[in-house]
Image (cartoon, rainbow, N blue to C red; front, side, top):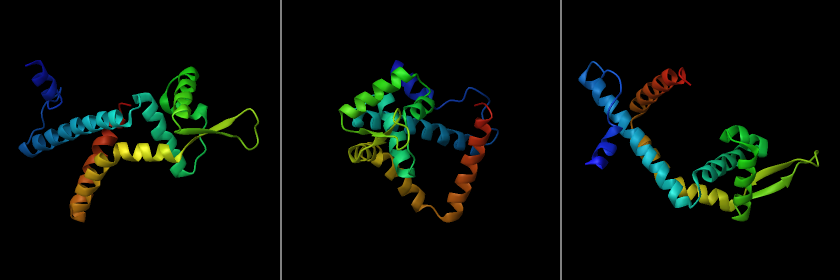
Length: 165
């Protein structure tokens, strides 16, 4: 019984329901997506065999590598919204596992960059591939006008939620 409540908690709004049946179905679909996304993130974290903080840092470092950005510990402090001590511990753990390399800053001898290794890219890709492949498969199956409509609705909802951030 308690787990039933937990499983269904994400299916309910804590506000008035949408006025139309179509709106209620859309609300239910969004909440279902939110729940499924949360479960997929938890599965990716477990399959990565990393803590949530370590995996998040690694994802940012992999993205930085893909974007051609040099990221240092100060960048991770901001991105992870945590302390320098925590970031130092995260980096140390990721270096020990071969997922991160420290590279000297080219002009500042006191500074270094934190770079995701090929093993890190593989770990992140392996952890998120099933999740992301499922999303891309559905998106690619949509007619262009449906994809545009869905994108518009999601953008509008996200913009409204951003007002509270």
